[in-house]
Image 1 (cartoon, rainbow, N blue to C red):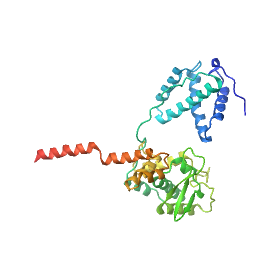
Image 2: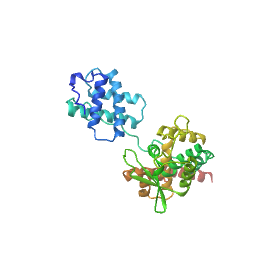
Image 3: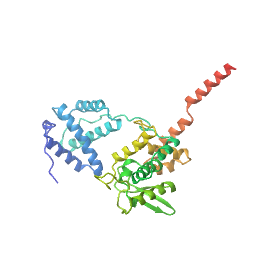
Image 4: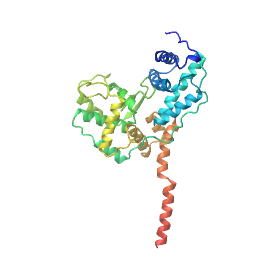
Length: 321
């Protein structure tokens, strides 16, 4: 392990890019998080490094961090992205205070207010059916793309979970088929979802079309000449889904691959599934997250606005008579 990088208040942030990166790596080595989280923290703190190189010529103060916060807003990042960038800065300066004695300019800094509700819209049952029917399944690509939509719209998988899925994760338990899932921020495939008969039939047709495979092969693969057989990443999965959403006339930034996860959960509630059953399907850590979906569904069915509309219409009809 490399020795800690010596630093004094007067030298920061006037250190070189190489020294700054050395401090970042020292911080990340001491941070008890997964490797995936380290990658995200490294990316996010380097955004601050690039900004401070241009905008900060002295030891960072609270005003410096507030200026950075305003900069993030001007870049039109989502509230979630802003929060992730600030979280990395906050954790980095906690480390700098603890290990190198640098005053922490992020102390008592307010976080970014997160929007209530969902940032993505769900599809209706008719729209989901239309999406499933929009994919021609007379080729391996069509079978793959169809399965992507089926897995997202029926099993509520996230894009990262779909990208991580292997063929061997499709297993049988009792008289049911399941798909092992490595969730967001997880190191192991320690959860699973139940595969219905129709969805399993799609999996069988797709795998039969692929020919000889191994259990460790990715479930979703690239079919391009340059990287045939490589695991599809989240960006590719989103692009494929967006193509078919546009095909059925759904071309909104609020309707994406993640919308299919919302759709699966919302339609399951409408179909009579309990909150606990939907929590297990969605693999939410706490049931309060699942309750947001139930609240949205209940809000639409029992909205005060429509009751007022009905009252006003009845008064108009009475006057006509």
